Image 1 (tube, rainbow, N blue to C red):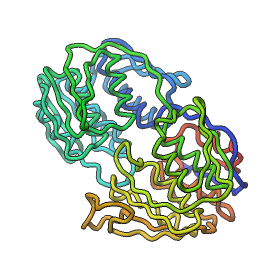
Image 2: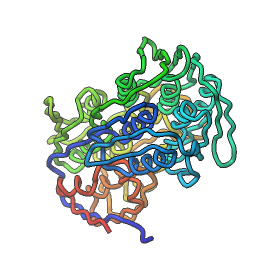
Image 3: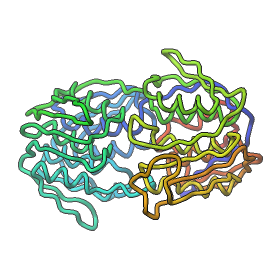
Image 4: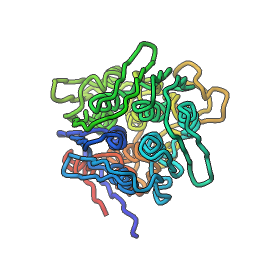
Length: 433
């Protein structure tokens, strides 16, 4: 099969309107949750991304029916035909491991292939496996995947070593129909976690949020169907706001509520961005140029790790030295060489810069960066290694001198809603081949 690529000609400031749909990181988790209902569930405002098709394939493989029409997805639960997610899905994304709990409830056994997703650092399955074992499941990790068996999951207390989003989701999906009460300590509290919990509550789950990152779940015998509308993707919204800023233009983003972007908005404002915010849209511009900043990523409500890739490109256009300290994934800066090849002046370090020592202190992980701006970037031939790095490459190409060829575009299409249409609407000269 011929490799898909994008050819980009810098075409000046990007201006216009973008409407974001529900988050990639939310829609697939809702689809898995819908497996647990006794009736169909419908998810509205779903993005048109590759992640949806991959997840639909997994659900259909085990016996569910998935109907898609425009921005609406309906999952029709059915008897589990095969409690093993096919090995053909090995490495495509992180969703298979989230299906373990639901499959144990529905079939008493499960097999899922090895997880995949973006190569941004270790996302160990230990947290997931330890949690399922605490519920009483027998779990075996083999070379080709994970086998699990349980006659009944029983509520328990889960102390997560780190507020992992994926592990919190695994516990929620197992706890809602487990016998008795489950308490999750040190749970992730990202908006997508809250959104998933609210969806499960609509299905009949009993979930309470307690102080200090605790979530309490009282298991129920049965869940029904539910209808929900996903909130706008905060990562995508931030990415397009930066697209306007980095090119000297202004982009008005519709569909993502302000409360999902509080930390991001303030970070950009400190760099010199001016905002107009209404109940319907958010617009950013920087008529007086951009100042440097020191930013540390963190779990919610801190600065999201997925925001830092477009921010890194923005740093190259800020007048001075900026610092980025990544504390969530140890290999998140793997995309930096691609930006360096386009002329970005970025140095990466294995020490903690721009914030207090993090869990990668005294490791070999290159997790801090110093960026010098303003830098003239040049067009290049770049391979996108993952979804978020892919968007940063598009931003770099948009502000560079000369044309660029971007490869590995399937990554960005897996996570962003119709990016070619969106970028063209903003005035970017982009040819998809």
